[in-house]
Length: 292
Image (cartoon, rainbow, N blue to C red):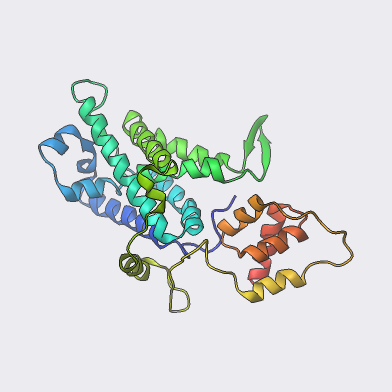
């Protein structure tokens, strides 16, 4: 299952988070100070530094964590395209902040035990919060068996998340759980968070900086993914074979799935009708039409 078709197009917030994670990892690894970013009760109470708290929320400590984390962040850019960069920036700030607060609380509660002394660093809050809409909103489009075990097209994302969750044992398990809690609170619309937006001045500023360029200019996304060109829509419509019996109207969930991947709603509907509601075939049709 694809998370999108055009890199970081219409996903400037995700691009900024990925760049921040990568750059901070390189900087602190080069200085051999990556271990200094881990959260600890002593570091928070006695040696508190705001920059360190910020860095620990974005920089991974090890290369495997970075690889799996960036992969998941890149895949979950589909949600930024779905709700728009403005609301996704609120989602990111909320989940990272709430997750960090919960992690600090867990360190305070467990400071007198031998169970936990430090926590893994990195954007665990944002990543695992994204598993809430991934589980609830992204449909399974295909199933298959490997060595007698049932899998779906979503299984590999869950496996990557499990690998990241257990990468540092209990040190990464608790940040992952805190991220799931933060994502659940956002889903429940605590304090009306889902209605909040970033000020347009701030949103436009970061969109101009982090939005990938396309032909020398870039424009921030305001809706699902941005519109596919009318030429692509006409190409899909003109490819509709004649002589076939009318097909059933495509379900809205299938259309929403294709829209979240970066395609125009009308073109997605036409492709699904041509593919007789087979989402994989419809995706191929849209991709072929887009290259014309």
